[in-house]
Image (cartoon, rainbow, N blue to C red; front, side, top):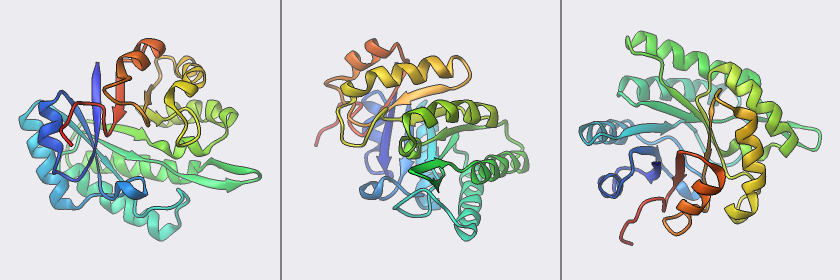
Length: 225
């Protein structure tokens, strides 16, 4: 089982890796759902993780709030992901939605621009393609729209989708049925990464119920408070 620890900056990264986290989702400002960490934090975390057989996924998000970005914010995200790739991260984490009648839809134009920017950045650094996780912006979509979005994200080259499987704050156990539908829909095209409300207390139960090999969370490995 691969445990992805959601880290706010570098502070708890060493302890999380010691506790069994083999991948770090690196963010700042978890109080607003995570934003892009500083260049120094990205570099230090990546160096440490690679020295200790762990990987780093870097959050690319210029602010809290919704996931609908204007052109200025898109340029910021493209610049930030370029810096992250040059620092050696193993993957990028981003998501984008746009308003639609009755809620939110996948913003395919912004998604395409970010995926293209990631590809250009890896080529410039003479690196192999890196992982891309579409984060919990996915949970803003309706359940039906999520199934369609899986197809689009897979076609765009997204590696995995981080999702709670339901509304924020609901117990993950209440969302297992929908998560199973997403996993079936994704097949072997991309990975569904369950997160939100998964801890050392229920991680084994959730993994067994879904048949997954990756789990995500801030409490996914045992850490002292």
